[in-house]
Amino acid sequence: MAHVKPILPEKDCAHCGRVMVWRKAWAKNWEDVKFCSQRCRREAKSSKASDQSRK
Ligand SMILES: [Zn+2]
Image (cartoon, rainbow, N blue to C red):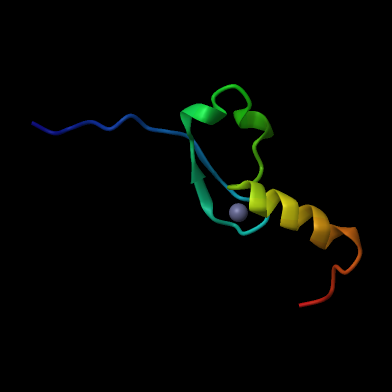
C-alpha cells in the first residue's frame, strides 16, 4: 500500500541555487520562474548591476 506522490517539476534558483519545487502559484508562469523568492530576484538584479567580481 504505497502512497504514490505526484512528481512535481523542480529547478534551481538562478541566484542562490536552491531547488525550487513546483508550486501552484507558479502554474501559470513556471517557465518564467527563475528565482525561489522575490528577495533572490531582487538581489540577483542588484548584484548583476555593477560588481560581479565582489564577494
Ligand atoms: Zn533563491
